[in-house]
Length: 214
View 1 (cartoon, rainbow, N blue to C red):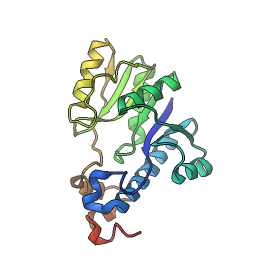
View 2 (view 1 turned 90 degrees about the horizontal axis):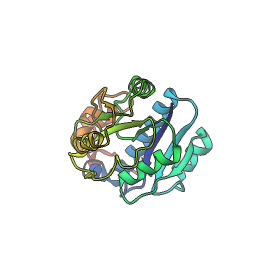
View 3 (view 1 turned 45 degrees about the vertical axis):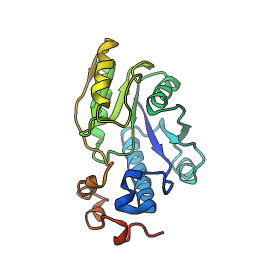
């Protein structure tokens, strides 16, 4: 089962913008870099080859190029006017069964991915891991479903609810084997600090504590 990661370039002022009040622009960008590396480690533990990194705004940021050179990950450019179009394009390009994750869920484990893969292999059309905030942190499809991502208020707390409506309208069989949390707002940093490798975020919750050092 192939796996793809959607990642935004760790550019100060453009990455993890809702965390800038807590971390500063540079600190938020550094966290984006670390979350991307964490997601890549997760993906390669699940599937050592055929890992694709779908990059925004393009593949040319030096961080992405370094990952391609050092790790060999395939770089693809996210294309589309909103997240739904970009995800639909990724599934269309791949064609076959695919798991797609973002970088904002460091709580995700390989077991979640193996469970999702088994569900697709056993006949489900789709599998999702919803997020506590109403979105989702993983989607897997047995085959492309271009209309699945239509009519969704991306960025809102209604994403998963509206997606269920689309799944029902398309008569698709799906599963939701877990619910996880993602790192999106300053309030999420305390929980992030409980995870291995992120403990500093429990002590330094704003730029005044040094996270925004260049």
